[in-house]
Image 1 (cartoon, rainbow, N blue to C red):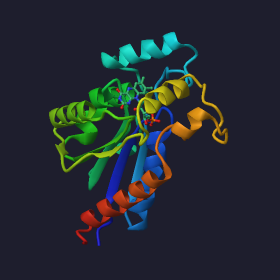
Image 2: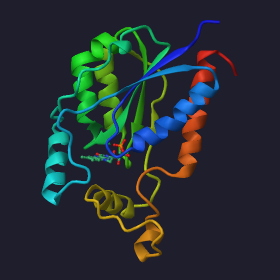
Image 3: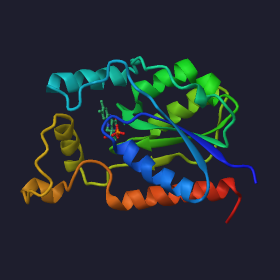
Length: 214
Ligand SMILES: Cc1cc2nc3c(=O)[nH]c(=O)nc-3n(C[C@H](O)[C@H](O)[C@H](O)COP(=O)(O)O)c2cc1C
């Protein structure tokens, strides 16, 4: 049988997309899918954590206006015919992250044109505008965007989810084991263990779809 092949183009700033992708890939590979990865590497990345609140606010404004950040050239291996292409990354100020936008500007038509693409999103909460913008751009590149996006949000109640995100961005998180008042409301930044299991199952599910198995 023809080996099924999936290309995953991804950017991850604080490793949350990558953590979910790791399990997703485990699911794909456990069902016999061959996965090729392309990491997007900004030439001048933002500092993580941000050195000041001013720096974080500046990044939020820049990303709201979708200012691109130059990325290093992608690998030749990306050009080809894939059973699926996954475009993965975080939501930044309601939009795809700057490295993903830059990828679509520079390589979108050549890598995604004529391919079936699935958006894969990691965010605190708000992914719909991101998904809509990404789909619109992908369609412009000649890609077929099929099915629902794969989305992971931070499953913590507000306002703790937002406060925790801001603290994490500034490198001000108290240690995980600390039994503080805040910790009880904010067990930790990002996605949780159960979501990793969901990501694994999503990978298996896509693999079965590609082999057309129930
Ligand atoms: C500059 C910046 C802007 C962000 N804007 C949003 C946003 O508009 N909506 C949202 O739900 N999350 C937003 N986030 C949170 C990230 O999407 C979230 O933390 C995600 O899980 C990070 O994934 P990563 O670790 O792969 O980069 C923002 C994060 C940063 C750094």
